[in-house]
Length: 286
Image (tube, rainbow, N blue to C red; front, side):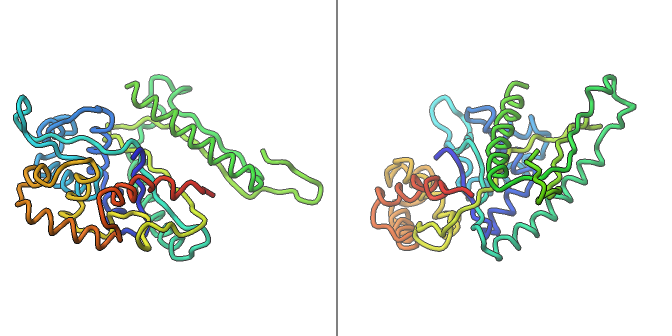
């Protein structure tokens, strides 16, 4: 699955997405594109090893990373990401979802303010003209133009990710005015901060039917059940899953039955289809 999709009503997942250290670790693994040990992650991010382990456990419980056991030449366990992108799903015209987004918006602004305090004064920059770039303009946008703007911002986000990897509406006589303010700003930081992934917000027109009321199927499962489901979808046998998770095959069988019951499936093919169809469920983006 290319994109990890989380329901905004999944509070545990949202807390993970707001954990800057967890997201920095995920972004590091995504950029590296190869299995990396917890010790190496701690060295690169300058985080305490115990904190890295805690975040990796959280990421793994939400199927964001995969733990690869020590085998052959790999002397210690390593981790790798299971997705390339992250998205948050909101239901259009759902007051509960919008209320949640407003509350999370407060936290986003608070995080932005903390980062703003880390800005370097322009006078301290060696290239003042290039150190700060901004675009501020009142404008009127139609619904069609707003849709086009969303698509172009997605392209801009992809362009910015590419850079990271490498190191007015019409005005009529009867309808004149401005209803949006748009701003892009680039400002040098006084001290480095850990990179964060791009998280996209997606609106859907209807409730997806994925075995329940949640968009994120993992929301119904316990941490251990998520690990078993994650391994089963990757095609691991019951014995392989038991060995990887250091459990008995009988325990894996019991957990598998619980997973099937919670997700409303009867076999591995249906289980895989639940996850394989997840991006299709949000194809109708407002």
